[in-house]
Length: 177
Length: 267
Image (tube, rainbow over all chains, first blue to last red):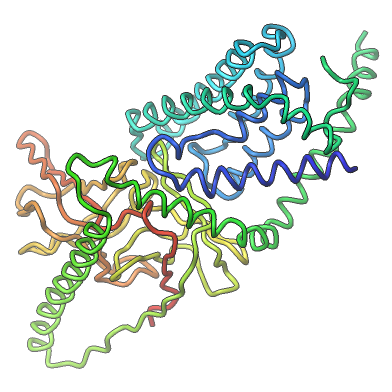
């Protein structure tokens, strides 16, 4: 129960920082996928399936308050979460910096491709004109910021680990899937 | 085999899945009070982000202009554009009055200020949420303005305590507008994503010039006439196409605002 409370608390804080503060910043900073980066870090580096649920719930919240990039963001975020978990468990099980980066990039690319497919279907079924230039620009900047955030998280890995222990999210015996 | 898989799945994931589904249901049911409670934290964060955007404006422009000068000029531009729009409409109204010799009751709008609590401005989408909802008298389609009556969006989703506003530059939004040109061309302004709007399907016999003002035409429910949208930046006259297009630059950049006003009653 305490673990659930702290999990929910950290998720809310990260989500609010992303959609309220980061999205109000200029230039590439507004495209920072903070929740996705943290969740991928938890999945790959700390073997916490909590990250999967953070990604899915964040996609749901974006659909709920209608501030997603595409309609039905929950589909794209769910696919991204599944790929993050599968790749962390089977492909990039090495807890190195490159493992985190590779897992983050492949799962985020899955999310982007899913959004492209959904946007394509949406543009065919409605009169809405899609600017692929704008979307590509967003995809490039958000991917770049994802890498930056993952780098920062890796640098502070020890402190994050301590925080996770103190908030009962991570147990001392849990190191792998 | 399938029995073993189900037992394994049930043991590992069923409990957690049920908890997550329960959390999603709770969020959905209590989203009104939740967004209301969280807005106290979100509003200052949005203010801080917007402040950073305004202070670093010079980094992303080619020529250096101080922030205070830009803000001052933009305020003057907004005020002058608003005055011109009102003047144009007053001239037209006066003309009609003289022709009809009838009394016209001017509409009185009720404004409600609201703080932005979250936003997305990426790809083709440009939406933001505010801390006012249906309990404050907002309805779907209510116009949202900044400054001197400059339209920045329309309410597209509502709860009791919060609302989602779709910006005029979002590619899913269309607004009925009038060009303040000689022939008072009416049309639909469609967001292009990014920071621009496009006016499509303008007949070739209509004269559209750069720097023509675009205002709301009043032909939509809940949207009064005369709200400024932007100025014509580029005209694309294509003799081979049946219509011409005009690219419109919005007068207000919502990324630089954290407080907006909603027009709740135009009667």
